[in-house]
Every structure is written in structure tokens, then in C-alpha cells.
Image (cartoon, rainbow, N blue to C red; front, side):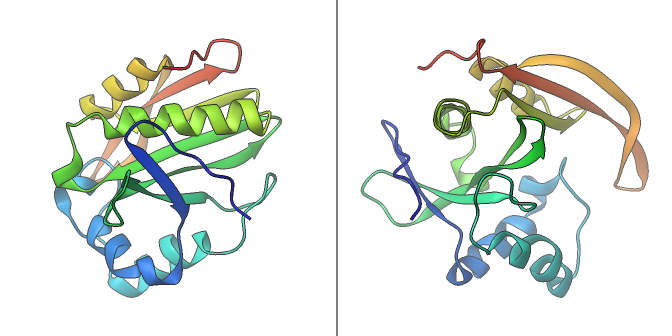
Length: 179
């Protein structure tokens, strides 16, 4: 059973098959995906991004723990958040917010919740995140939560027909501070 992760404004549940339409809407919204990925056909999104996140997750799983985030008392999804175990006590975090939910602090709040769960309850020693250079909103969100920018991977990600830099962020368990 999935643990109860909540915060002042948010609650979460694991992604399920019935979330397909919402997940697809995120993946097909250029405002959401501008710095994340090039457009893909629906079949590829289902196979390569959605279905691989549906199996039961536990620490050490090779797939993402993908959580649907919702406002407290609401069932309409705002976005998805989660992490993947990269081994050696490191988890990579990520989140996507629907365009109408952006700029309201939900990203930072969800990262605080994910950090608390991953670092305190699951015992990961470090969280990492990779952001395409230019994605200032995600950069500010990570810094607000306490991540530090550890470097830049030059021309490491192909997006929109060009090689783009990636910013790499990290947060150690002993650096994380709850809200």
C-alpha cells in the first residue's frame, strides 16, 4: 500500500491506468513540455512514458514512482511528480504541472513532500534533478527547495532540433530542511 503523503495544500496517489487522458494532456501541451521533450505520437507516449510508470513501485525499482498531485479536498489532478532510484542511495526527482497550475507554488510544495518521503522515510542519501538550460521556472523551484546547482552538462540533450545544455542539481539528506 502506498504511504499517505500530504502537505498543507496537496495530496498524492500513485498513477493508475485511468490517468491516461490527463497524462497524455500534459505530454501534448507545449507549454508543459517546452523544456522537457519533443512531441511524440500518442502510441509512443503511452508505451514509453505512461505504461512503464504503472507497475507497483518499491525502493530499487527500475521505473519511476509517479504520483498524481491534487489539491487537498479535490480529485482533479494538477500534475505529476515523483522519482526514480538511480542506485547508491541516489534518486532523481521530476515533476510536470498542468499549465493552469504553474506559478502557484505547487511545484516547490510537491518537491518538499517528495524530498521528505525519499530522504526521511526511504533513506535516500541524495536527490538529483536535471533541467534543460533556460527552464528558469524549474531552476527557481529547485533552488527554493534547497537543491544546489552542481554543474552544467554542455550540449547533452537534443530538443527542438538542437543540442541543449542541461543544468544538474543535487540535494543531500543532511542539507534538506522541511518547510
